[in-house]
Amino acid sequence: MIPESHEGYISWEQFEQIQQMISQNLRGGGRSGAARRGAGLLAGVLRCRRCGYKLLIHYTGRGHGILRYSCRRGSLDNGEPRCIAFGGIPVDEAIGREVIRVVQPGAVEAAVSAYQEEERKQDEVLEALKRDLEAARYAASRGWKQYDASDPENRLVTGELERRWNQALQRIDELEARIAEHQGQQEPTPAPRLEEFAELAADVEAVWNAPTADVRLKKRIVRTLIHEVFVDVDSSVGEIILTIHWKGGVHTELRLPRRRRGQASHHTSKEIVAAVALLVRTCSDDVIAGVLNRNGLRTGRGNRWTRERVVSLRSWNKIPRHNPEKAKAEGWMNLTEAARFLGISSKTLRLAVERGEIEGEHPLSEGPWIFARRALETDAAVKLVERARSNSRTPAKPIDGQENLELSST
Image 1 (spheres, helix red, strand yellow):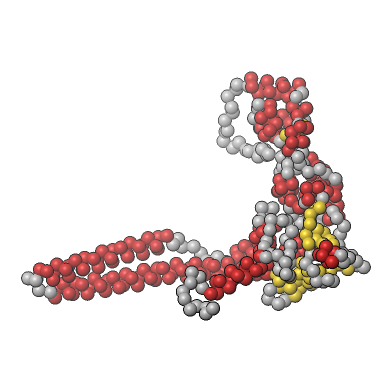
Image 2 (tube, helix red, strand yellow):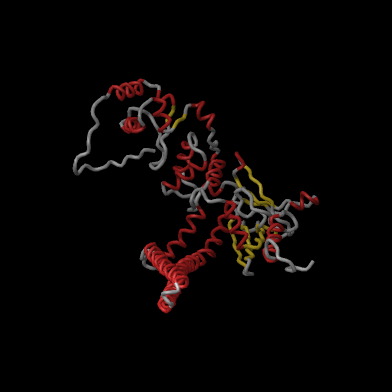
């Protein structure tokens, strides 16, 4: 084979990059494999310091939502004793913090470079149009000179020179219009300050920890920055020892306290546990995580809530997960469903609950209401429906200086 002897669909460098990507996406042989949908951030990246095997990932608990890493490859393949095993959530969080710490300075530099590159491109387009305009004006001037120097009696020559001169003038008009349009699209904006870019870098952490963040994208970011993470467990002091091998050749060592399953959730306040126990009646784990974050609540370790942390909290406190069929059978509803059940508006039902006429649960101020069907079948509920349907008064109109109550509609 003689590379580059004939022109191909892609270059030889692109072919080698594709082959390397395919090789890295294969599992086994010390490779991490392609990023998958599982919640484990370090799947295929952790390697046991004791035996050298890659750690396996598995999920435990109800709904298989609790992440754990374990070194079982020697046991599965050769019947050797198992090496180490530990909970994956604190390890993923620690590696995530290190990735953010490394990426944030680069985010500032990337934002500055992107802004400067965009300005440069805009300037290049404008300069190119101005050069074209200068060339068109030269062609028009030259055409005028040729036309003026021609013999008027030679109609064939003068007609052709006049046509070329008119085309050059039309070209000038087109370029002047394009330049005016391009300059009109460029609204004068002040150059962003370094503080603004610093705030942008701070947003990287919020995006990384957002419940809607794509875990596969996060895994690809980790694998772009980290070659491998060697891990060991020091039982004498109860620590997990992580040695991060960055792609640039730098090594970082982390020591994390080893916790029992669910121990991190065990330190969460009793108020949050009680709220979650109520919210599971009508909300999934993802919704509960969003509600807790919206209320400014944090885990016992001060972290934002994710679906995995809600699962861990439920598992430790023996709280069953939300089951739509079971909730429907037991008669649990949110505000919208309860209002539809009664045939009245959500606002009317909420005001009745706040007056104490209807029984309802509101565990968090920025969260959903929870109703039991039995509370909607009482005499008070029947009277509320009759009063709402018979009330035909004209709605009150706002007056000057009237203030808003800002009542929650959730």
